[in-house]
Amino acid sequence: MPKSTVDGLDKLEDAITLTGANIVSISGGGDPLYRYSDNPLVPMYLGMVMGICIKAGIPMEMHTSYTESEFPYHFCKRVVYHLQSVEDLEYVERHGTEIVRVVFVATEKLSKEDITKISDFVHSSDQIDELSFRQMVNERYETEYYNHDFLKAGHEKGLWHYIRQKDYNIYYAENRIYTKFSERTMAEQKYKFQLTCKSKIFGIKTCEMRLETGELLTYMPVPDGVRFCFGTIKRFYESEEGQKIIKKRMANR
Image (cartoon, rainbow, N blue to C red; front, side):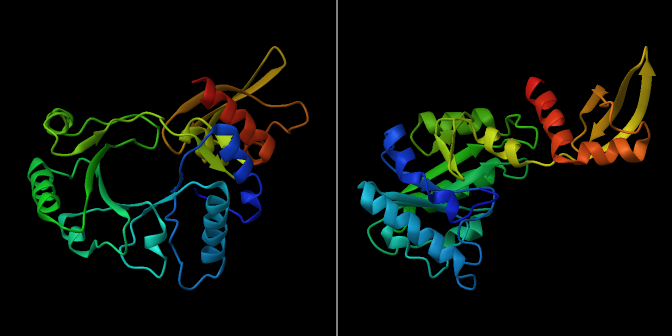
């Protein structure tokens, strides 16, 4: 997840019991193994997760793009390497008895030729057990369909697993449980915007803004206590209270 704290693990054991989870999969907006070797908080955090998993009697799965790290990969039931190119496959290796999976996101740049090369490499490898291609989701949480039919056909032939976009997991972050990944990221997201106009009709003050991602939000309320000028309105919508209004409008959309 984009933000994780040690205190955010306080309710993980309870969440495992409450949801009936049979595995804890560590992944996020940022790589879980980023700065594992030079930031002592990272191995401490992951060590606490390991301890909770041991106590709960369930295995752990790691999602990472780091093929080389001091992290004890062998502790995991499965390690899922998120790779970018065919060349990255050369650096994937097993460290113990863990299941090794490689995943590629089906981006616009990933060609059918690349997909075939990746599949051929994996099937001839004694280090990699599983291959998946995952549908790309853009910044608006919309599913893209690059090489969709080709990937679907390969999935049906058993050449790889094609992961179509849907929320099939239960997410835990900072002592809260989510049923959609977007709920978590939207909860933390700070919307950047440009005010495009303001109006006052029959005493009702509103403004219009365009988000950095392109969405145009109209008839956004300007509270009575906010001075009716662009600078003050902008500062209000940059505040926590204003961001809540934007998030609510985006959720309704």
